[in-house]
Amino acid sequence: MEDDQVAAFNLVFEIDYLYRVFFMSRVFVTGGTGFVGSHVIKRLIARGDHVVALVRPFGNPALLKGLNVETVTGDITDFDSIYSALAGIDEVYHVAADYRLWAPDPREIYYNNLGGTLNVLEASLRRGVRRVVYTSTVGCLGIPKDGSLGDEETPVTRDQLVGHYKKSKFDAQAVALEYVSKGLDVVIVNPSTPIGPGDVKPTPTGKIILDFLRGKMRAYVDTGLNFISVEDVAEGHILAAEKGLAGRKYILGNRNLSLKAFFDILSQITGRPSPSIKIPHWVAFLAAVGDSAYNGMLGKAPNIPIEGVLMARKKMFFSSDRAIEELGLKSSPIEDAVAQSVNWFTSNGYAPTLIVKNKMA
Image 1 (spheres, rainbow, N blue to C red):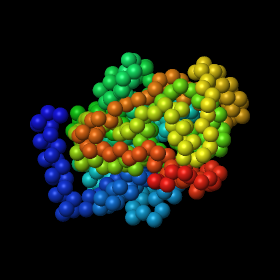
Image 2: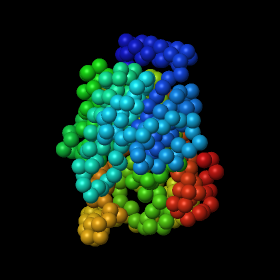
Image 3: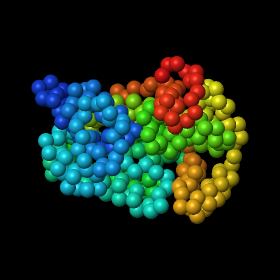
Image 4: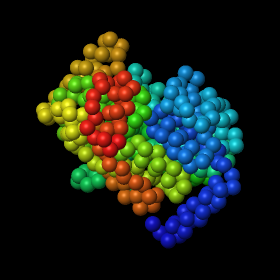
């Protein structure tokens, strides 16, 4: 970083610290009933903030049970409910996202991810919110063709992205940057693949873990992801609010692993066998087409989303150096996060009970 940038964020950090010493900050979180958002809320409460969480009219607040958090009813697609909820709010964490690889009507994904982000940012601007942390994803960042690690500045075009989820988040991230030019202090975080306890839906990654635990994962394709503990992702949000620069993106990631290596970790922790059959991408694609056609006739979501198979053609490996150097992002052992995820899924009835060998979690 340039010296003037270092001086600027140090000054902001000192002002923010003094503000919190004398006043309890009121912070607003969207997506607080979800996987990442609930962990962000826990971290904010530990910091001493008064947390206001947005809960949809028919949302499930189970992950907020027992937490000292104020809840307000609303929806990110309803501007009036957002604007009303932001009265007196100092910071906003826009974590809510429609994370699906398939939807009966793809327009729903854009309505939630793009339209919802527009509402949150516009309401924040009008209310004079001091800082917004927008949760994006590494899915809308570029991946180098030479096999090196992607970072926040790796070029990518919208047409190069696969799937409505990635494209909707790409559009929403562009809107977040536009609001910086309008005078709103927005910091962007790009989580990679969070794993850990509390994956209630579950996310597509959580479903991979569940399928493994249920004995349904018998083969794999040659792909890879960057994994990170969901608790480290939550901490990264707080660090971005405290130290990040407006308009700057920060990848919140940790360890790059092939899918086979990830299954091997699951096997070591659970004692279940890791799949040993590697299937070509074209075979996986044909299976996804057939599965989608069959489940489509039944009016059900596919077990093998075509978008997921197409995404798997590239290894999504990234560098988190910027977040480590500028924010102080920590890197907890992935094995611990996997063990915590397995424990949570089994103890909450998602998968058969088993003995988890890794006792570090």
